[in-house]
Image 1 (cartoon, rainbow, N blue to C red):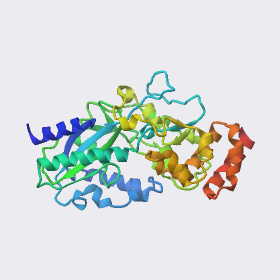
Image 2: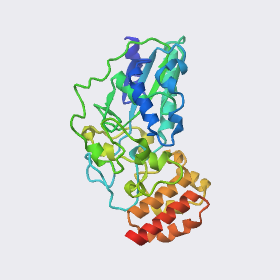
Image 3: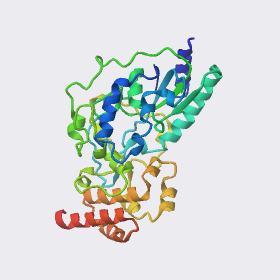
Image 4: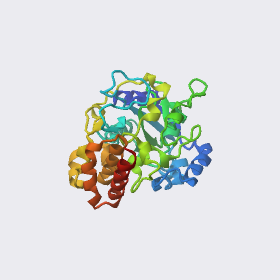
Length: 355
């Protein structure tokens, strides 16, 4: 069995959803597009996306003499329990609580990937002790979606997500960089699977973040606003956030390619911590970071921290016209966080004027 076949078998044994191989430093043609994304400030306040620019296009900055990238994915899809059956559509729950994006139902995917990649790397070292390697999953400078497309796992759709044949876009991406020279797989063949004239993701995005084919203004994305954006959110965008408390799945739920979605078999994704929704009254009553940690330890929701999630809960409560939560929102006018105070003022004003 060839080395490449052995590597893919190890990945399969570790229950990765896909595994393919590419050569390093093949993304120079994408550099202009990425620089435009940064220059237009479409990355919002995510300054880390500006850092290590050269490393994104030259892996020698990450691992000298790197020759190959072993790209892997994990399917994380789960059907929502409150949906009788799942099909790509904008799913608005009837229970009037805060929605959680699917990837955040269970354990933090960084932790899931890290343990799997560590074991994968150990097995690769046993195969070739002379090769050096490093591994990442959303915590390094690698342009993962572009590298995954170049390895042939899938293609980047108009929603700017990686879309695979087997699982649609419901996958997380990780990679191992190695100094071992491996035979590369063919890049994804866009003649066999494309978005074509479909623009469902673009017309369904409430904030207009998907402003052009294959381009996103990340500063308007609901996932960015609910997770990465620190501080106040503009009054223009808050009403457009709907019922999304943490993350957003709309551009995936409407995508026809996601008809092929399969429920994940990864226990850490299945075992809910945050689950598919959160009780808004409970979130509004979280008093401090310690209480927040106790509730969401091990969950991706730790990324948002108390201030962001309480802010989001005020916005969602307002969008869902939850007048029963007004007493809790009014109490937050005296919160230590100016962001929470500002959002509570907006909410009360909106209730008075429009609801």
